Structures are given as C-alpha cells and as structure tokens.
Image (cartoon, rainbow, N blue to C red):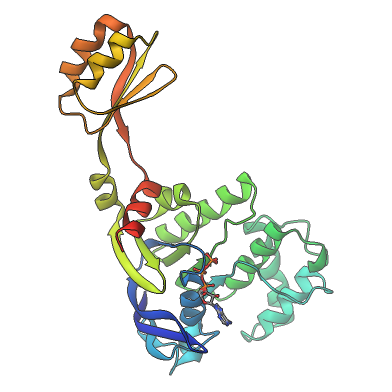
Length: 298
Ligand SMILES: Nc1ncnc2c1ncn2[C@@H]1O[C@H](COP(=O)(O)OP(=O)(O)OP(=O)(O)O)[C@@H](O)[C@H]1O
C-alpha cells in the first residue's frame, strides 16, 4: 500500500506540490493524470525516495520513505519515464551488478536475470549493450530490475510514452497481472484511454494540487451522456428541423447529435423513422471528457 500524506515540495521559490494526499491500496491500480508540469513525476520521485519533500511523507506498507527509507524501498518497484543506466555494459551483466545490491550472488542473479528477461520480453537480448536498447527495451529492462525484489508496490511514470502498440499492451497486461497478485500500482499517463481501461481509481493533479479523486465507476456514472446520436441514410433540412425540436443539434455528414436531448430514445426514434434512421443511440463520454471537466472547474 502506498500512502501519500500532505506532501509539499518547492523547487527554489516555486511550490510544485501543495499538500498532496492520496493512497493506492493493495490490489488496486490508480491512474495518475494531469497536464504537463502538473507534478506527477515529482510526486512519484518523492514516493520512491529519490527526492525529499519539504513537508509531508509517503508510507510504503506503513514504512516512512523519509525516515525508514531502507525498509520502505524494499517494497517499491519503479519504472521511470526515461530510465537511465550505465550505457556501455551488457544488459545481463548490469542486471547482475544491480542484483548485488540486494545481496544476491552472481550465479543466482544470472539465473534470476534470465527468468526476468523472459518475463519482460527481452529474451535473447541479454548480451546486447544497454546503449543499443531502444526506448521501449530500456523500459522493459527497468521493469526487470524493479522486479528483482518482487516488491508489493509499483509506480509507473509515463511508461507508455513512446511505446509501440505491443509495448503498450505489454505494460497494460503487466499492471493488470500485478493487480491480480494483490500489488498496489500507481500508473501515471497522458494516454487517458489506457488509464480508463485499467484503473480502479483516478487521481487528478493540477498545478501541484490534487483536484479530484474518482473511482472509475463514479466517472462512468457521471458520463452517462444526454446527447443522442442519430445516423440517417440521407440528411435533409426537414430531418434537421425535426431533430431540433428535441434540443440543440450538431450536424456532421449524415450524423445528427442532439445535445442534452429532452425526449426518450423510443420517442425520438419513432419521430425520426420517416427519415430512414440507420443508427440511433446515446453517445458515451470518456475519461478525456471527464478530465477536461475536472481541470476546467479549478
Ligand atoms: N529538478 C527540478 N528543478 C526545478 N524545477 C523542477 C524540477 N523538477 C521538476 N520541476 C518543475 O516542477 C513542476 C512539476 O514537474 P513534474 O515533472 O513533476 O510534472 P509532470 O506532471 O510529471 O509533467 P509531465 O506530464 O510533463 O511529465 C514543473 O513546473 C517542473 O518544471
């Protein structure tokens, strides 16, 4: 479990995090979203202990990252947006070197490395130099490294950036697998459709402040749209006039959107049937729409 409690951070005179609090429970994926510069990476870096907060603290399974860093760190896995490693070494050699910090012998680390390289899709690339790894491969390597201690808490910082569809699917499936294993996962991303697909809860950060925390169910419920989408085989002036009786209309090709439609679906369907309706139904909103609503409200 990851508990972020009243964390504030200044860089020079600029306050970039202001009393940030939220938690990630075990067996839960929490999406962490906000505009560029909102404070996501800074929050994650404080949570993993690479920088210190000015005030507040982060508890990893109850251990303070500022006061009990060694023990708190044991249960953190972190995949940064831009993993930085020693470039001029072979990947598996570097993995074995890092495993040494966890007290794992070279022989055991080599075995573990082969297993984890396979798990993250890097089999056969163990002897390549890290300098020759692509961006997506570096992220997979960072994941393999973070799996060394099989931690119970994971923080993914913009891990989907720059990945191909296969890489995106890999990290999505990995997060879901970790969730099934009961781990706590914080997942920051600008790809809101991906967040919506995997998250149980979404934390919205704006200008260093948490402006909303919503469960995916709450988001879906609030997005039940009141706009009706009517597709006609042939749009006519009469059809548009008829549709306008139910609310403000927007016409795009042979599609009419009736915004904030006042009538029910069956009634509109009956009235519009004389204009050869191909399709009719309520439009559904998405996390992106919700995100902009949240951000514009602050
Ligand atoms: N080391 C630093 N020194 C000074 N300012 C910093 C430093 N790191 C981050 N900042 C500033 O803190 C603010 C938050 O940055 P942060 O990287 O946390 O945002 P983010 O939400 O992760 O953005 P993005 O989506 O663009 O990655 C920004 O204004 C950034 O310029």
